[in-house]
Length: 398
Image (cartoon, rainbow, N blue to C red; front, top):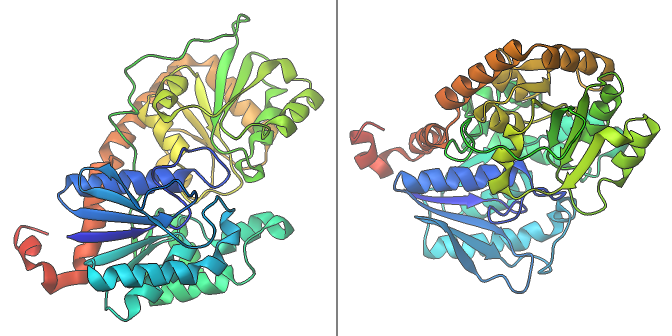
C-alpha cells in the first residue's frame, strides 16, 4: 500500500520541545515508521523550513520525508501557515498526478485542507486526524487563542468531507459529534508509544539534589495551557518534593522561575531545558512521579511514555487522559493546585501505592499502545476505504 501522510507543520524529523514541535511530530514519526515496518511505502509531506533542507530524506525503512516548498523556507508559527496551504496543495497535486498514493492521511486541520484539495480530482480517499480541535482550544484559551477565526468552520467542513476521521480518544468523538461531524465515519485509534525506548528497565538519570527531596517531573512544551504553573503552586504544599521541569526553548522558562520565586519554592524548582529524546526515559525513571496537568489535552503523549517507563502518573482529567490514565494513574481536575498537592503528598508518602500504579501503567501501555498495534488499527481504516484496489490484502486477512 502506498500511503501519503500530510503533516504541514510537524516534521517527524524535527527536534521535539519547541512551541510548534511536540506530540504530533512524535505521532507522525511513530506511525509512519510502524507502517513501513508492516511493508507499506510511506511518504510524509511537511513544509520546508530551511533553504538547506534537501527535497527528501529517509526516516525509516520504507518511509521518506519530503519537504514541500510552500511559503518562505524558514520556520513560521503554525497559525501563520494557512495562506501557504494553496501552494502546499498544488505541490501535492503535482506529485500525486505522477504517482498516486492509495490513501492520504492528513494530520492537523491545515493538512486536511491541502490533502482534500489535492486529492479531489484524483479520487484518492483522505483520512483525517485533527490532533487538536479549534473549538476546544477556543473554549479554554478564549481571547488568547491565536488560531485563524475560521478554523472551527474549516474543521467542520473537513470532518464532513474526509472519507474517515481517526480520533485519538473517546472524548474527541463527542467533540466531533457536537461539531456536526458524522460519527459513523469516526474511528478511535490512539496514539502510540515506542516500547523499545520507553520501558521500566534501564538507567535512571542521577539526582543532583543533595537534600533528599522526592523528584516530581514535568516534561513537555512550556506553554500556558500545559498547566505547569499549577504544579509550581501545588509545590508550596508538598514540602518534601523538588520539581524538575524539562522542555522548551531558551528563555521560555523565565516566567516559571518568577512564578516559583513568588510562590516561595524557587529553591525547589529546576528548569533543565530541552532533553534529547533518547534521554527522556532515563529522566522519567529518575522521578518518583510524573505530573502533567494541562487545561485540555487532545491525547497526551507524556503520561503514556511515563507509564511505559514504570513511573506513576498524575494527570488532569481531560481529553485523552480519560482513556490512558484512568485506572492506572491518578486523575485530578485542571487548574486546582491544592487538589494536586494533596494527591502528590499521598503518593510520595506511600511507595506501595506508587509501585502498584507503576506496574498497572506498564501493563496498560504494553497491552494497548505499542506502535505496532496502533499501525495495524490504522491500516484497517485505510483498507476499509480502498477496498477492491487491495484485494490481495483483504485475502490475507485484512
